Length: 355
Image (cartoon, rainbow, N blue to C red; front, side, top):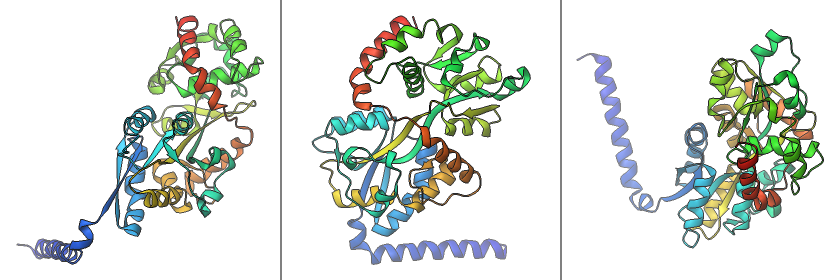
């Protein structure tokens, strides 16, 4: 048996023994270990938090944090189903869905704390019933390879989607199933003289302005990488974070901030009302806004911080500088009106635009 192998085995044995002793010593404490359940998107986000954020909080408070993965709609449905006896303690939801959750009485006010005071004004939900944990925005993305070949300048306005040179080359996400599609449509509607309560101008103008340019309406953005590579898609609504993720895979896309503004797309967190650990849940929500937690999810999960004090390095620093600049003219939707009217808009969109 080689010496290296022997010392490795021995070391493993010692580590196990030390762990066992520690467990024995904390026999009483370990029986008391509390678990906090947090609902959030699976994938990259879950991985970044589980590996680089929760362990520090767990050590600090002697608790276990377990992720319940799902889309915002899934998580909301779970919270609603268990409203009287919540199974989760904290949940992450996209901003529009978070406004709905607050309206349903599923959230408990976040108590004042230094990190909450530091986040961007746009990251505060009404009465601090929730707070933004990561910042995004929907603007325009374009096929850089095609633009270069054709000698086209980068887009500068939402109205570029109506430019005749993009006939058959605009790809647009369905308003009925995508935040990106909804955002793009509502910005076009504003330019036509509408607002988040009145979408008549947008629906009237679409068929003669952007409609003729649309190659395909897609339910989600999953097909975009393929459509850029095959040269079908020239321009489409997307977030800077999604653009960065495509570029990492070698897809030739760039983000462009429209002069009329991008639309804020934020992931919010809220402490679930009547949960079994209100004190620890508040502490977790506070911890997730801290500069340290936010710096780690930026570095390991490409989530843009809502706390401007979060240190950013390398690629992250560039992304944060860009987002900070673009936030200056970013638009926040009137979610109460949008949520109230969206079922009717979806039906109208499916019948008149995507028929």
